Each structure stands twice: as C-alpha cells, then as structure tokens.
Image 1 (cartoon, rainbow, N blue to C red):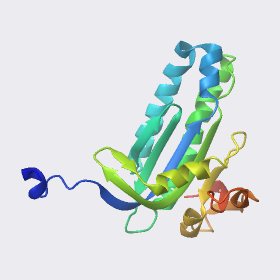
Image 2 (image 1 turned 120 degrees about the vertical axis):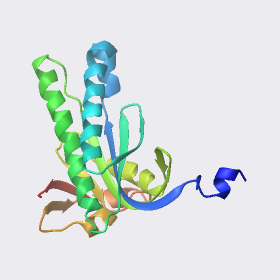
Image 3 (image 1 turned 30 degrees about the vertical axis):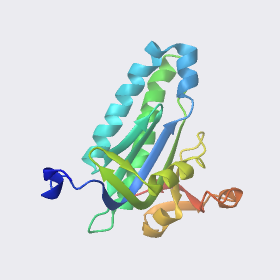
Image 4 (image 1 turned 180 degrees about the horizontal axis):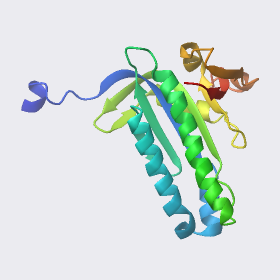
Length: 193
C-alpha cells in the first residue's frame, strides 16, 4: 500500500447513487460514410461540446464517451431532484441534436438520429470515469428508444422518482417483456420545470 493511499489521499473508486443519461447518434457512422468525416464530424464534435457544457452547468458529469455515444451522470442530491435534472438533460441533448439537424437540413444533409435513455442506480466513480450496472442498464434502456420520435426512455427506477404532475409519461408497451435483460421502461415525452 502506497503512502498516499495509507493517508487517505487515494481512496480508489467511490460508490454513489446517480441518474445516468446514455445517448447515441445511431446513424452517425453512416452519415460520415456518405458525406465524409470533414463534412460531419466538426459540427457533431461542436454539438457534443455544447451538450457537455450545458449538462455540466446543470450538475452533470461525463461518465464516458465512445464513437457516437456519450454517457453523463447526475449524483443524487439532498432534494431528490437528480432524476428530474437528468431527464431535462436528456431533452437538452435532443434539442442540441435537433439544432444540428436544422443546420444540416439547410445544407441538404440527412438528419442525425439519436436515442436517449435514463436510469437511476449505483455507480463507481474514479477520477474522471464512471462504471457500474446503472450505466449498463441506461444503455439497455436507451436501446428501447425510437430514433424517429422525440421521446426519452426512462427506467422504472427513474419513473418512481419523477413528479407525475410534471412529467408526461406512457408505458413503452411490451418492451420489458421482449428480453429478461430490459426492465419495464417508460416513454417520457415532456417534463416541465
């Protein structure tokens, strides 16, 4: 054991409850293939940077990114509003991508399609990375999202924490029964302040 670890400076991974937002641009690879990376990637990268700035202002932290996907988490808070904050962040992601699509539409480029899922659970955070089952479940929940809709898919753990007077939710029919890996999920179409 190193001297820093012994004195408590390096504590290793920290466990925490958090709301996890998982998002993916499902057709980014195809758009890059058709239009070329120089036409698509600079705008997409700037869009991700803008999303990251907005979500960090809302209290989010980047859990990881790979390819066309990005994962943010919002640590639980004293007021228990972290799930709502994460859901609003999910709609922020969709708004940014819609803005990118509006610009690309003017240029004659096919729209970017995204899917977004939100889950609440325990994660392990170490330095600037996060991992854990809650992140894996967020990715599974995200896979139930329709890229042609404006919905955000939320897990049952998120559903339980949302103020039903603020959120317009509907059960995503039969998806929970399609696979034992995917718990029941809900389609969130709107959440008010």
